[in-house]
Length: 262
Image 1: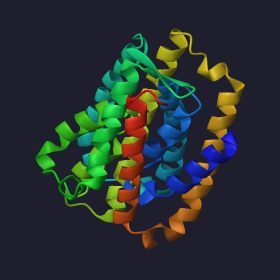
Image 2: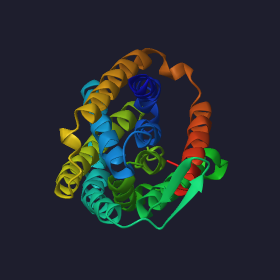
Image 3: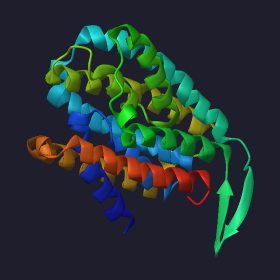
Image 4: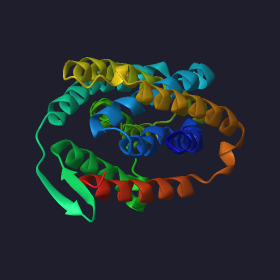
């Protein structure tokens, strides 16, 4: 059942990221959080997200606007180091409180509160019309890269901000899709490297857990199939519907995570 849940989730959301520029990490993180600690769930999601971006870059990367990739991507990569390191620091903090919810013991930790708060904020980007349609001037690309990269390193939630900054800067759809894929992959490489060094250093031993590795590889395979199939059909899906469903799921998971239920 674990493999079915992970595979179905990765398959369903992976194709949506090809045109939206975000979605896989947003929805896959709470799925992995059901099976791993939150910091390991972030790392596992990063591995799947990175593998998915390798495929996306191979398919659409040639259309990237490299002037924007450099102007937006370099600050994003630098900020991703800081965000990923921050996750390592907060993950080692002790629990804030514990309480019983029926037969279940809910544990509220600083990292869960941070993740829940971030997910709540990004849920608003999907649900509130004013934030959903948020656009930024080209002059703010460096700031956008810093913000997107930091949150990408901290929680993997880089796509909503990245899309908001890049969606209306005077580039074609092909350039937008290619540029977001290249920048996202660059941030993934940075954060996966930092996560590996940080979590192995604190004894997570994520890479040594065969069950965890199998779940990750299952998600990667399902995501690849999803993006290849969706490449032909994704344009028939309304982005407003995708954003609303994503926002509702984020809102529910954010509340559960911040309350220590998951």
